[in-house]
Image 1 (tube, rainbow, N blue to C red):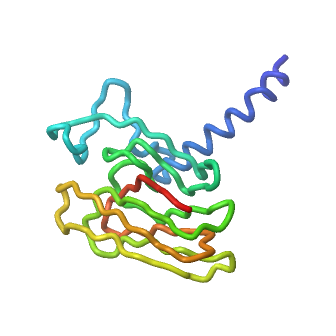
Image 2: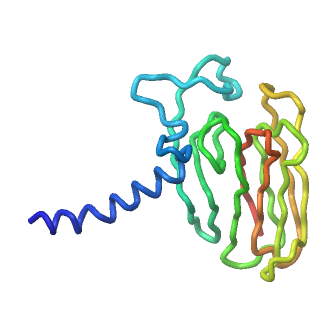
Length: 176
C-alpha cells in the first residue's frame, strides 16, 4: 500500500518542488508568497488608489502556450502580466521560444523605470536579427507602460533583458 501511494504522489511532489525552485529566493523560501491573512506591500497597481495589496503568484520554469513557450515564467505581480521572478525584486532575462519562426513580435513592458530594458529577436541559428529598447520614465513608483515591436522574417527566439536595477513585467504578447 505504501509503495502504491508513493508512486502516485511522486509526480505531484516533483511538480511542487519545481514550482518552489522557480519562485524561491535560493534559500528555499518562496518569494512573494504571503502567509494566509497577511497583506503584502509593494507598488500599487494602477487605478487601485495605492495602499497595500496581496498578490497570488504562479511560477514555472517553463510555461508552454499554443505556438510558444516562456522561460522563466511567473504571474501575479502587482502590475499583472508575467515576469521572471515573483514579486517586486530584481528580474532576470526571459526567453520566448516560438514553435515556428515569426516575422513580428510585439510586447508591452509594464512599469519600465530605467534605460536598458531590451527585447532582442534571434533567428534559428542564434543570430541576433532585431532589437529594441523599452523606454523608461526614470521615476520609480510612477506606473507607465511602453509597447514595442521587433520585425524580421525568421524570428525563432526573443530574449527580454531587464535593466539590472529595474522591477519589470510584460504583457500583451502578440506575434505573426
